[in-house]
Image (cartoon, rainbow, N blue to C red; front, top):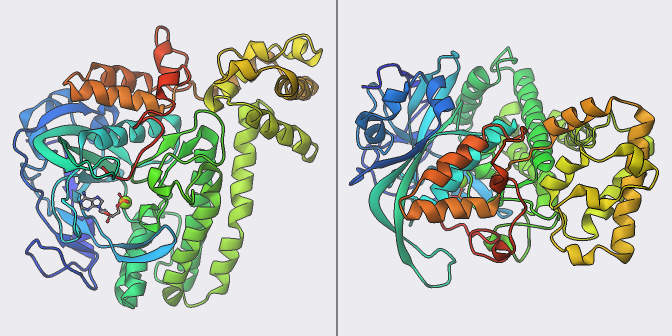
Length: 527
Ligand code: AMP
Ligand code: MG
């Protein structure tokens, strides 16, 4: 049965666990995990799997299409040699310490060694109650599971650090959800995603031990994390290793934020329990993709009043989250100053990553000090009317630089990127046209090869991102038992930077019907 998978239980084998073996909701102390079995599902059905992830794990197509596969990755059949567990963690939610959270519906089957010799944790999300389920049911529904499955694989192909997804399975069971939290609970189809990552450890895994004042277990978890996930760090157990580790966490997080900004991704719930210690995008919930460029946009209706987790705020929130992590680990590190210094480097680190990314998006070799006007003008142009961020940058690579620099070609050459074309006159048109001209002059001054510029811009500006409304279309089809839209879309998302013939329907801007449609522009945490 799935014999090509090489399993290894390093988390359970090397870290302290909860001695209680019964599965009931409780507070757990001084333990990194509790052993727990997934709940059986009644009639699991495979909806989709990622063939790339599967082959990395050594699975063949026949493996993935076998009955064993759907049984194992819905939680019905035990993967040989594993001790499934739920992790204990805490977290700051929306700015406040929330106490113990933990894997309330995620169960890690174990760690596996891929054909690339890398280590992968396999985790079922939506696999039933655990000691950390608090008052919830431990389950997940099709719509949120499909969104997580698609987006994690899409992010991977976009080159953004992320947890991966191996499979999406319908459980055959019904789950009750009040989707909009408006007093209308309804039955939905249950689903389980198998997520894959080198580790699912979050900032909150360390914070919980600070709250418990258990610095011994915290130190063991830090050492374990450094050993397995930060291979460049030696002298494990020494203060210098801890400092270097935190510096690297800051740096990886800064890079992740710059990548989210580059592609227009809004996480939606950047609580510290949703921050991966290795700088991966983790826990896809009410996330969204920018359609019209808007730093104030958040897809999460639960966050609509304060917009704490809006697009333009993500780097600042990441910094705040890192501060909570620093507060948690300072007793183990032994001194605060190096942690403060590392935190103070965050802004610089983010800015240098993002400046590089933006230069690539604009097809410039580098951004220089004199470009500050160009960048201010860009922001002004993007905000002057509703402009699709993804398509704007993509089409910018195709403009006629010579004609634009001479004022002969204007915004029309950008094509169908405007959500309010009727606004393209007067001041709005002037703002965009004059920026395009400034930009074209700047590009001309760099005197690069136009063909190569377009090619390199295309590598920085994806044409296909998992647009919010396309996810909803995929969900609507899947709800009817038709997975073909999902499969076609996943194929396209494998090559997001390459124009694919006949796949226009996955690239276009959001249609008007989706502007205010639930699931397309408004999402709650209900999942
Ligand atoms: P999230 O905001 O989705 O990252 O979840 C925050 C916490 O709530 C985590 O500890 C989750 O495991 C837990 N949680 C979310 N949904 C459920 C559910 N349906 N059943 C049990 N726990 C859940
Ligand atoms: Mg979470």
